[in-house]
Image (cartoon, rainbow, N blue to C red; front, top):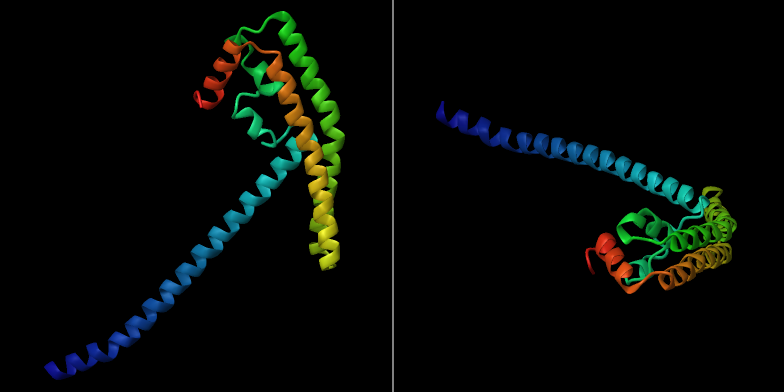
Amino acid sequence: MRTRARTVIVCATPVIAAIALVSVTAWAQHAHDVSHARGHQAAQACQSEFESVIADGRGFGLAFAADQNGYPGPMHVLELQDRLGLTADQETNMRALMHAMFAESKPKGARLLAAEAQLRRLFADVTATDASVRTAVADVERARREVRLVHLLTHLKTRDLLTDAQRRIYQEARWGGR
């Protein structure tokens, strides 16, 4: 009886191992599928946010290099106007800069979004070639450069309208004194 029990256990072990392997593989595939779906949803949400922000004339982080290093943008300055103690003239100038930035950035942003859509279409329509992808990427990057310049150059102008003390307060408020 003891021998038979060992035989059953020994014979069952590969079967149990196989079942366990299939179960683990199925669970891993399910987890991968769920993770992949969530990743896809997150990517879609990010793309939608990018499109919305750029269409509104905002920069979607294109001016981080300036903002993080003491060159604030007018929109964020206006968000912190009480803390910064903006004068009436500074507030007026910030609003004018922000409106000018949006007026210039919106049409350039529309070109960026159109260029991005064209690049996606090449792949979606299965018409992408080496030459068409190179051209589409060049168009995207040219448009991105134009939008980015609008925002970075506005950050330069914004900084000049603030005092040293206001810049320090801004830096602390936005970036923890970095």
